[in-house]
Each structure stands twice: as C-alpha cells, then as structure tokens.
Length: 438
Image 1 (cartoon, rainbow, N blue to C red):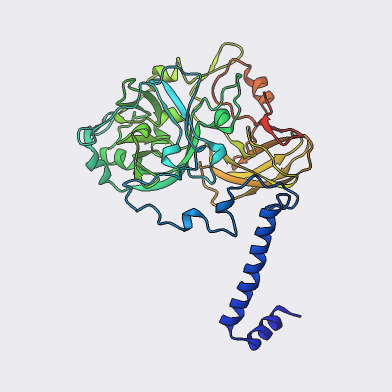
Image 2: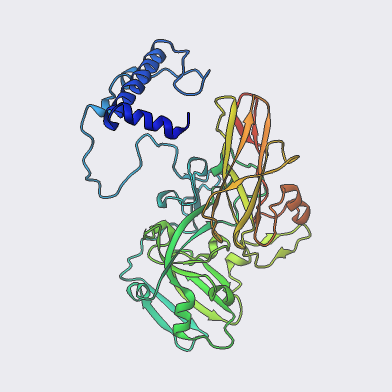
C-alpha cells in the first residue's frame, strides 16, 4: 500500500494525537523489553548484533532512571565554559623530545577532534622563549622603513580599521620530521596543524594607509617575545592575504597564540605568522634572520639548502582510525581525516586500504575553503584481515601528495622540514591500529 494510503487510514481510524500515543506506547514497550533482555542476558547487545556489551553500571541503564535524571544539574555560573569531565583524551601534549619548556611545543589531539575548526584551547602551540604576558594597553605596533610615513599604532587604533574573518589552517614546517621516531598517535605524527577562524585587519589596508615607496620588496616582522622572533615576508604576499590578527574563533587571541596581536600569513609555514607582533620593517631585501638561515631551511643531500621554502604543500591525514585506536567489530567502518594545502583549495582525496596498490576517491565535506582544513570520509570493510590505510590529497594546482620515498629521493634524508608525505596506518588482525612507518 502506498505511504499516502497508510497515513490516511491511520488518520481515519483515530485522532492524530491518539495514534501517536499508541505508537509511542508500542515503541516504548518494545524498547523496555529489549533493554530488560539485554540486562538479563549479557550476550544480547544494545549496539551492533553479535557484539558483547561491557559490564554496565546497571543502575544508570534502561529501564532504570539514571542518577543524573533524578537530581538537579549544576547551575550556569561558570565564567568560561569547560568540556565535560568525561572528555579526558582531547588535550594538548607537550612534545617529549624538548626538555626545556621555554622552547617547546604542544600538539593538537587530531585523533579526538571532528571537523575543520580547532577549539582555541586545543590549537597547537610553538614558542621559542616562553609565552609573554603582554598588556594590550601598553603594546604598540611600529611600521617603518620604505613607507611614505612611519607610524606607531595602539591596539585600539588597529581594531578601528576595517576587518575581515577568514578560516585558515596553521602548520609548523616541522610537522612532522623526516626522521624517526614517527610517533604513535595522529597528534604525535602530525599534530602541529590546526584550523581556526582568524579575525583582523588586512595588512594591505594598513600599508595602503601609510603608502609604500617604489623599492619596497619585503617586510621583516618582529615579535615582542624574549626571542624577538623575526621573519621576512615578500611584499606580494603582504598585499595579498596577510592579516594583522587579534581574534581567533570569535574571541581575542590567547597568550600562546600571540595576544594581543599576531601576523597571520595563510598557507605559509607557521613560524612566519609572528606572534606578539611589535614591528614591521619595510625593506628592499629579506632580513636573512636566524630563523630563516640557521633554522627553518631545508638541507639537501648535496649540502645545499632550499631558499625560502615558505609554502606548506598539499597534505592529508587519516585521523580515525589512527594510531592507538582499535576496531571493535567486523563489518563496515569509515575512514575520516583532514586535508589542506598552502596553495589553495583541496580538490580531491583518494584513500587506500592496501598500502597504495589501489585507490578510491573519498567524499569531501563542505565547506571546501582555500588554505583551510578540509574534512574527508570514506567507507571501508574490515573482516579481521590486516589493512594498511592511506590517504592522498590533491590541490587546485594539480599537485599530488607524495610518498615518503619520493621526498627522500628528491631531498635525501638530511632535510628536517616540509614533510608532506602520505602517512600509513596499519590495522592488525586484532583490530589494533599502529603507525605504518614504525
């Protein structure tokens, strides 16, 4: 019988409210019967058929009324919201290889997150001389050099310029190293990447306000931290999409993200987005500072170094299932992950379950934005066999994410930075997932 006829006959038999109540009574009775059977017979699962149910706290499971339903909840009095006390895994972890916390970093728990926006409290951090506590009332931004006029701005003056909000990723150029150990979890492997909405003033707006002289080719940006972190940025990039950012995900920057002002350079290696920004020097040449000569350069096998490898190339990472996860049942599963490119939009992600012998396209979740994280997903079957899960991204320039062996062939094993190679995850017959490079 067509659905319309079924619906019509029900409506004729009894008023809508009574029909709905009858349905709820029948459905409720069935649900209670199932729950009682499951409690009486542990072999019956409330989840997937044939899956054993862990020992429950019976008093809080159906058909009983849970303790949190029988009491009043906590008052809404917290001045700043916090996660549930049961969410204990979604935390940043200090990288174990750096013993000195003043020059250290912590990683985003990618394997515990969903979507393309990283909560501010979980955004990865990297600093070179600790996190300064900068008073915004006393902080200033000085812009000078090859400009028609030089100026010193307060934070209030900066915020009075027209602003924009854009979603972009931020990634450390050392995410991850070419060298072992490769890490167990997705966070340990590639947790120095996060995604956020950044709000601030386009640098172009302020430079046009000051005026640029004909010889202006570079801007040397300097931070107010104890390391006076300094990087050189081509003027073309500064006039394109660079921001003077003061907010992240709708709230003011946190101290570890450069409060009260940071430069944000979309698609370029993270250390160029200078935090605690205090000075922009417009020059004819790059500054050749410590952080772009002795550090953050890509050494090649023949002893030369790649000069100014700013862009973070196309990359992807399966975050679930990933290292330390375990497949608990046989049957249909889903790979989930993120992809990104410093050159623009992700156009495709392929996935493999056999170590790259065969590939199939994954589904990209909207929105797909330029220089932002893009979520992808793909179904796969696991029937207790060994698998090697991989993902391979492509961006709008046609660039395809390479295998690690391809990068080593091109650069040798000396290089430390800009490893955007494909990351494998091994699924054992037990369902346990480990790093496929270990």
